[in-house]
Amino acid sequence: MAEVTQLIHDYLRHNKKFPHVFCPGCGHGIILGSLIRSVHALQLPKDDVVIVAGIGCSGRMAVYVDFNTVHTTHGRALTFATGIKMANPKLKVICVMGDGDALSIGGNHLIHAARRNIGVTALILNNYIYGMTGGQCSPATPFGDNSMTTPHGSLEQPFDTVDLVTAAGANYVARGTSFHARMLDGLIMDAIMHPGFSVVEALSPCPTQYGRKNKFKGTVSMYEWLKKNTVKLENRKEDDTRIPIGVFRNDNRPGLEERYASLKQRIMHKGQPEPKEQVSSKAEAEPIVEGVAEKLVDAPKEQK
Image (cartoon, rainbow, N blue to C red; front, side):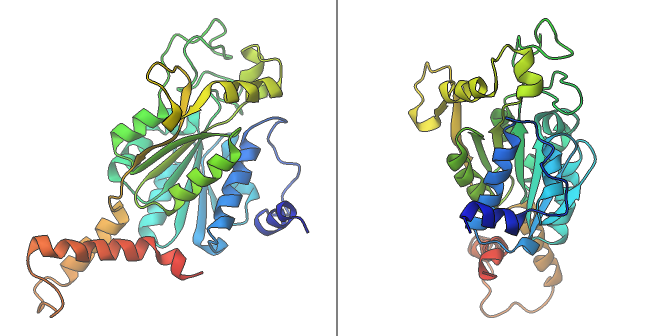
């Protein structure tokens, strides 16, 4: 059996309606494949993975994959994901959202998840438009581009997802595209295993809503546009106007759930005799906190 066929059998729910809901040429199917390959390459047990999704085209991912899945309300996927991670820090919680879901109604939750640095991986599928609900302008629609609600061109500047979550405090920030699928595999794998809040923005063509309204000749032309108008971050020149892709931030600060575990341990042992191996000075005590964090982050590896 071919590897791709084996992955389909191992990671997709066969009792769901196929073919899937994504339109022909939609980049979301490619990103779904990238997510599955990433989890498979990391050899994570399916029971240790939780996919939390909001409303929209990207939200349908949770329906098809054979993990622990939650299909939540619009814009609130990160609140559910935060609760799950705090309740069981050993789980790998992956939150799948579209640009409207993450940056509009869910924008407040996004910046605070980044501020808290909660150990969740946010996968933001950016197709520059509200695809499922009729093709309205989204917070990521480029200035001057057309949509159902901006037929003469958008007059608003879009959010830069990378800049937004970096400024808000995310630990790991990256951008890939559905054209650069293998590169995206690596970014998602890094994000899943990284401590703290990790964000991967994945640019995903929408031929049905965005492409038709912005004079793309077809699906192929949209992927050709991605190839022509993106550049790897390390190859980007100062005056380059192309969209940079790659890793923009790679910090190693402990996530909220790790800091909470450390605080809980300190409170529980307050007033008790100090163990012989435990140091007393604040400076020397820091490695103990880091040890707790590493143990939580590396838990899935020990279950291989």
